[in-house]
Each structure stands twice: as C-alpha cells, then as structure tokens.
Length: 474
Image 1: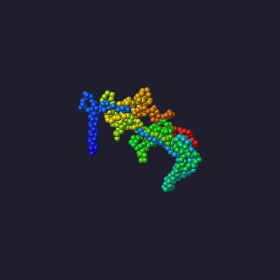
Image 2 (image 1 turned 60 degrees about the vertical axis):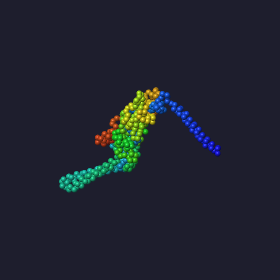
Image 3 (image 1 turned 90 degrees about the horizontal axis):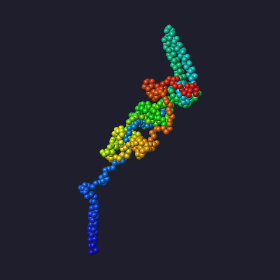
Image 4 (image 1 turned 90 degrees about the vertical axis):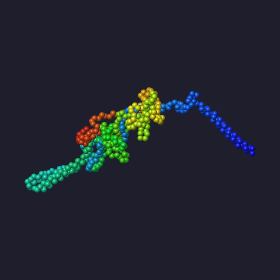
C-alpha cells in the first residue's frame, strides 16, 4: 500500500519542477530582449522598423527613350497582279481562208492597221453584182420619174421603182459589210502576242488568232480589308515592288475603287495605274503593293515597349523632375496612339517632342511619384546617342545603332539597313517624255473625248511600227 501512495507524490513533484524550470527560462530571456535603445532614448517612442533603419527607398532603375519627331506614312500592304490597260484576243466574225498576215509576233501595231486578210473573191463578186443591180434600179427610177411627169405612167410605178432602188442599195451595203468582215483591223495601239495561224489556214468564226496588249500603262489589281474602304480614294499613291524586278520600286495611282465589298473575304477591290512607257512591266506579274493613304511630316513616335495597355486605354510612364535637385520621378500619362510600325508607335495625344518615357522597368513602379534612376537619358528612340557605343562606350557608334524603336539600341549593323534597299545596283531606267498615260486617260475622259493616248490616234497616225509592221507578209 505504501508503494502505491508514493506514485502520486512523485508525479506532483515532477510537475512542480517542470513549471519552475519554465518560469526560470522565461524570466532569464526577458532582460536580454529588453536591451536595445540607448540610455538616452525616449522609452515612449516605438523602435524604428528595419526599412526605416536602412534609410529612404532606393530609386528604381529604368531604361528610357525620348519622344522623337519623324515622318510616317499611313499605308497598308497587299499583293496584286499586273494587267494590261487594254487587252483583246483577235477572232474573225466569219469563216474564211487566210490570205495575208500583216504583222509579226511581238510587233507594235497601230489602231486601224490591217492585221488579217481572209479570202474575199466571192464577196468581191457579190459587191460587183450588187453595184450592177443598183445601177439598173437607179436608172429605172429616174426614167419613171420623167414618165410620170408627162402622165405616161401612174404614180404606182414610180413608187415601185423607188422601192426597188432601196432594195438594191441595201443589197450593196450587205455585200460590202460581208466583205469588210473578212478584214481584221487592230482595235487600238498595242503589241501583238504570238499568233496561232499561218497564211492558208481556214479559220472558223470565233477562232483565236492573236492577242493584242496595250501596255503603255499597266493596271495593278489588288484587294484590301474592308476597314480600309473609308481611307482609299481615287488618285492616291501606291508603291509597287515586283519579285521579277528586285530592287526597283514603281509608283502607281489609284484609278478606281470597287463599290462592292466581297462577301467571302470581306475585302474591297482596287485598281491602280503604273506608267510603263519604258516597257519594263508585263501583264501577269506578281506585285507587292503598299497603298499610301497619307503622310505625316511631324509624327511623334515612341518605342512600342513604352505603351502600357489597360483595357481600351493606353498609358506611358513619363519621366519628370523630382522635388530634389537632379532627381527624377515617374508620372503615368494617358495617350492616344496612331500609326504602328515595327518597334515604334505614333502618339497623337498626351506627349510632346523631347519628353522622356520609360521603356523598361515598369514593374518596379507601383505608383506616381516613384523615384527613378535613369540608366540612359540621352538615348534617342532608334539607338544610342551620337558618338557613344554600346553600354556608353565611346568611339563605337555603329555597334549601338539599332532598329527604330529598339530600347537598347545594340542591334547589329545589318539590321539597321532600311527595308527595300537593293543589294545589287539596278540598271538606270531610260528617261521618258510626255504626260503620264495614266493621267492622260483621265483628262481625256473629263474633256468628253473618251479616248486615251494609246487609242486616240487615227489609223495610219502615231509612232511608226517596229519590226516591219504593216508589211505584206511575215
């Protein structure tokens, strides 16, 4: 019994010992924790935080660029195909055998020039027969008019002779029209293609003979998305690049805009005209078209990295002077953007020329008025300042020149070459004289003439044909 009573006593003593030890450790560490302020410190003042003890907040390091004034063009890119200003495939209206060909393949012909002559012996005989019948009918009618004046015949005989005369005249006109269809003339000035017939061939009506192309001016047909239909206008300029002629740019002018929007691709058709008096362009060429809607000589541009989109609004962080000397702080500014180019964005409202904006380090700026540490304040939008190399290394200006809009400006030299610069020197074009045929057509239509320079000259007029055009046989 005595051994069982000792167990509760031992448990109580153990608990008391553990409680005393815990109390002793707590009171031993309290004086050490209370040690901190100096003897002269105000005991009512709370201890300073770790951030306050470290001093004011450090300025955020950011990269910046200046707002630049440059020339921008509002344009849109598309692809198209070159077409002749006028194009036709010569086909006979009646059947017959070819007796004469008055052109050569690829020859220049004039409007009204005889190209193909079919056998007209039968039609010539019919014309002579009709002329003889007309002569007899005319003589009979004249005789009847004299007799009716003398009351030898009735007026009915005169009316019948007059009708016979008209029938004879109609037969002669029909014979002449049939004979005329055996001669095929050039409908306009142009160049012939490769013929598919030879003298002696028998042609059926509607058979292909040769194509004629008027390429003194060529059309380029292309399409643009429907959102551009309000911008494109007749008379606007377009620049055309051709894969067949690398390094050359051709200037085109919009001639017409299709009023119908294509429901399949939601695009609008556009036709522009190119002066081709140098005969360098051919119908069917593939063209890369840049439609020019307008130009802005003093457009304000910033690197695209400076734009901070928030919903439907656009912001930039502008660098302004701080309250202290030589200090810089941030200021969020809402802007309106215009034309976008690779690496650059036009700002129409919100910034002025020479303003400095942040292009890198936005995530470090939580609110307006944040102190900034500008890494490079003098760098323009397109690269480093003149005379400075990468990382501020003077004497190496080319290494720091980057593409427009590059915040670091440390692109390699080949990327600084403008797009479209020819790698090989193209042959100089021959000078041309006279008005642009694209505009000449428009002025002729406005004057009510309805004829262009390539089709306004009568038969036998104009520049002499080349390569023996007009000869009896090839």
